[in-house]
Length: 162
Image (cartoon, rainbow, N blue to C red; front, side, top):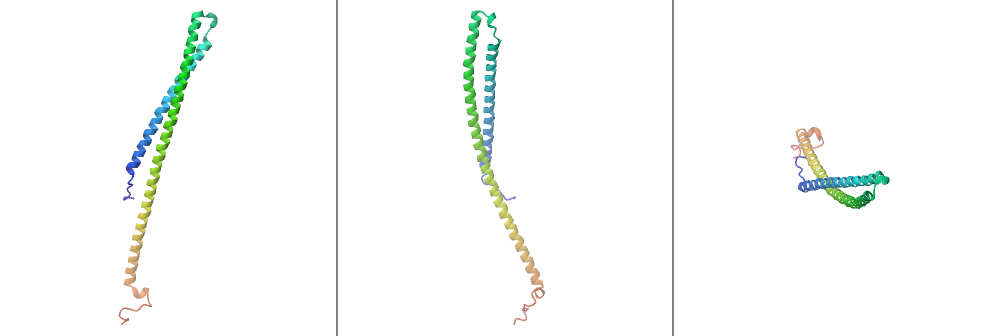
């Protein structure tokens, strides 16, 4: 395996970096989504507190009007924040899609690298097998050459052929 060099290694590294950037962007988008969702929940809690905690018997007209304007303001804010959460959710989905695509591209390159490595290992094993076969054949021929009359008794000696 010492001789294996994947020629597309720079592309694989670039794809891995792209995947890391996409994962990081996804994490940022998720954090932003969670932050906006928390703000929305806080605003809803405030509206609920204002709606339940108001003692209408003890308020005068101005306080009641002020409280009504505050509820309207909170409702508008909730609508705005719901839209913001929706946009953040869409952004998370977009970033997730980009991260999945980047991961698939990297995995494709890794699979290609594995195929190249496997082919290299097969070729290397074939070369080693061929070398071993040649050495075995050479050893066998040397052995056969040293004692040729014992291995092949039916064969005539070179001096007897003439």
